[in-house]
Length: 173
Image (cartoon, rainbow, N blue to C red):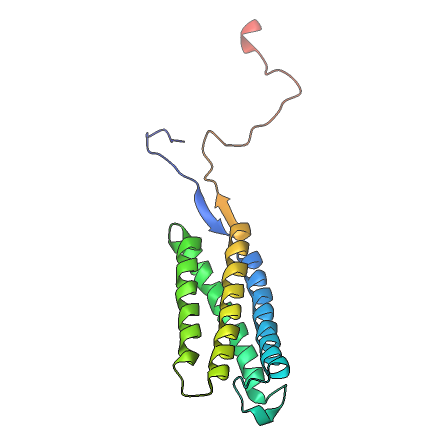
């Protein structure tokens, strides 16, 4: 598409911010619930201490709530990152995926470096992996649905009016 000056005009990508952030909020709820479920499975089924000593019970202590809250916050931060990338870079979903995979890798490796019981290391790493993958996959898929295309109005795509009658012919008078 080109204008009268011969310069090429392209459609500009946009973001349906309301849809993206509503999806980000839903992803935050999923991440928080996944954190709680992962901790319940590790402590309740496998009897492995995750984020709290074994004596704290299946529900653990305030660390369970804090971990769930931080997981939700991570999803909201990832939503902000996705929004920024969608506005600023080419191929935003590809950059988002790489950034999130590397952040998830750090979250998985970090507990493995601690000097605690090996079972707790592995359980925490698995929970972190599940949360990171869930956030990445969810936001990557909703980003596609949140992308819009803003078309600039040109002579080629301007709206037209339909007339019921033919235009008047002033030369027949």
